[in-house]
Image (cartoon, rainbow, N blue to C red; front, side):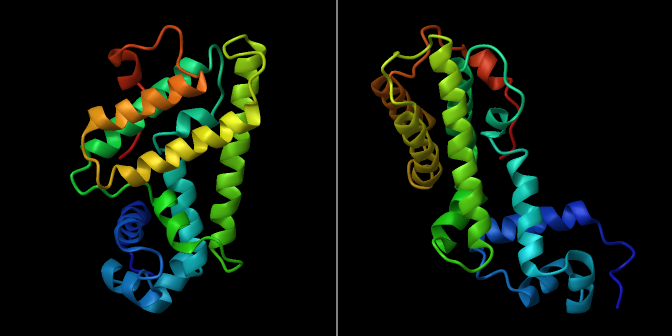
Length: 211
C-alpha cells in the first residue's frame, strides 16, 4: 500500500523526532510510529525504508538546527566568542523548554551507546566527529593567539564536548538559565576559554537555533 496522498514528510519527521526525543528510540517501534503517524506499516516502509533509516534522517535533520550547529558550518574570525555564544544559547534554549526534553542526540547516546547494533554506531560517529571539529576550532584559536600557547587542545576539546553533553543532561533537572550559565562560565574560565571580550546578550541571541 502506498503512503497516503496527504502524507506530509516534514510534519511526520517533526512528530517522529518528538516521539524519540521524549520516549526514547526503543519505544519508537515501527508499530508505534505507524499508529502515531496514522499510516499502515507498509506505508511506513514505503515512506522511510527501515526504522534505522528513519532515525538517521531524523538525527541528520535535527543536527542541522541544533543549538551547536553554528560550530559545524563555515567559521571565520575569533573562535572563543563563537563558543561563548553557542554555549550561552544552549543554556537559554534548554532552560526555556517547559518539558525539559533536552537534545535528541544526547538522549539517544545515553540510551543506546555503546553498542555495535544500529543506530548506535551512527551516534558514536557523530560524537567523534563533533569532538574532532571542536578540536579543529580550538587549534585555530590557538594559532590566532586566543588561548594559551601551552594549552592541550585535544584535552580542551574533550572538556568542551563533555560540557555541552552535560548541559543537555543537567538542564532536565536544573531549569534555571542563570545556574546553567554559571556552570558554563565557571568551566570556560577554568579552561582558559572565556573570551577576553564576551559577546553581549544581543549578539548571542542572534544565533539561530531550534528547541
